[in-house]
Image (tube, rainbow, N blue to C red; front, side, top):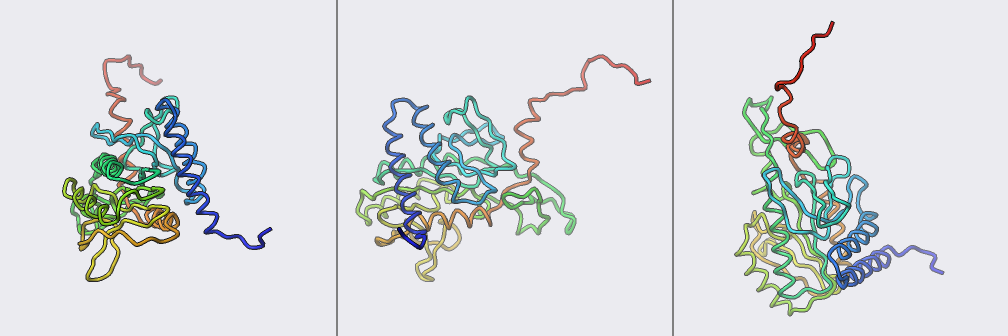
Length: 293
């Protein structure tokens, strides 16, 4: 019996089990069985490794402008603030407002060209949703700004114009998109080429931030001259970097997710009201009035 707890061995075991169970779920014969098996596994394994301020689900993501994403394997969202609209707890009919979603991910038993296309398409369907930019007047400048708040908090921040919320140009204000894959079924050079070609099809703010391949390595962005890692192709990123074969790729993904949960930003909690109040209608109509004596 081991006397010391090996955390890396434990995390590697969870990662392998997650991939195996995903592959098993994909063999289910109906969409509801596939979704249910995925959700159960993701909730049980992944949620225990993340801060208690978040929950993990599966389904679709919506914005208050009437747009809906494709069905997503992993949805990490604010536990205390984000409403969830679900019909019979079926993944294909469970919806999460984008303002409360922190990160989304796709799980693949192996990564090839077809699966890479699917990853880009699904993450784009989420990141192209628009969080409602709730306007407010700054007490410091008197100007109208889009204030922000950190995930898990109800407190929104007054700020200078250059600090205001902007999901198009600030990586901290975007939903983090990732994929977790078991094996790499492409040559690394081919993967890098296909990846850069896909980047030409989508807006920079709507592409994956990180791909973690359990039995191979990582796909990330970097500034080659500075030898510095970036997590989106904006700012000064100029290269897609496919690492050489390495260990602890699941651990790297977990560390990055924890960082996003701690440092990421979204809009004011008032934005959630847009999903509910429009249907309430005008209550001051031709009803019956009786004075209070």
